[in-house]
Image (cartoon, rainbow, N blue to C red; front, side):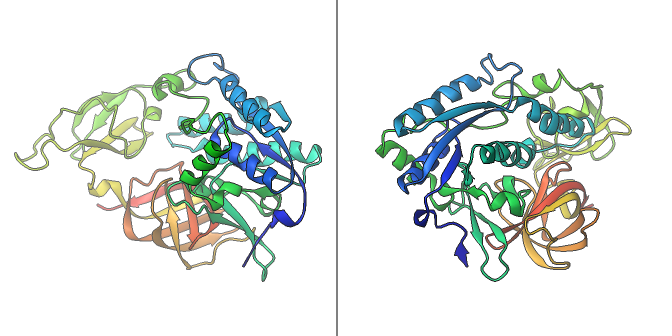
Length: 383
């Protein structure tokens, strides 16, 4: 296998998505050090409440501009907020309203960062774009296809969020920091005097920021209170609206000190409660006690809306690894019932998986190669 781009051998015009964070800043520096013409581009993807304490993109732009100044490169400020609202946020609300838990970062990468941003960069005459994601791209010399690989730092790998990228997008994309560990990125930033060398990594979604998640959703999604029931069918509390809960959730249930009715005294009596099921038809939230409750364990699942990096599905009945959520070790699994036309596929796991959540993505790997994935529709829990 060879790397897709040995960029040191050919000087290019590369547009780097400068977010204001240290990863994209070091990305720009590394490409500049190779002798490329580097241009920075800051993406503004959200406008509502942007002047508030929760999501102030102007602060990030100031940091990005300061990086551009230190590196001596141009930076352009581009507003993709309308595209984001239409392509990402609208789908986010639809999924939550249907009782699922979507991952807008995945859709943002596919629709904004590697579509709207890529198209804009190409209009600027870019040969490639680059971002600060911890992932890698290489070209398979046998098939000629571009492969998406995990980042070398296992604690920072972001290939999960990039699994919907296609051959056209990957052929134009560079991920320089994917070859490094985060500690090395910080060291480089400090060594060259970048102003954001010690800036804390961003977490969560910009349009929610640090505000309480329930408070944000309450503005956009209709909700109706209903019963919270345990696995015996007993009503133990009231929920505020099913959209505000996700499978596996432990905090914010309002039943933390409640004992299981009918539970025997002793072990397990005070075990924490977890969301296990959401019944939209009856507006019922089902909760169970204990992290390892059978209702939280799934041996199989099905997904839809699959996107495969190579353009063709993973091999039917093939043995792979899969993640059903970010920061999860690859779970040994077998893929089956792969339908390229409908984007349907199923996974059966060698070991039960915890809190497999509809709306999240199941991403399939062959070793370090990310093959693609789809949106989880349902799962089969142990009974």
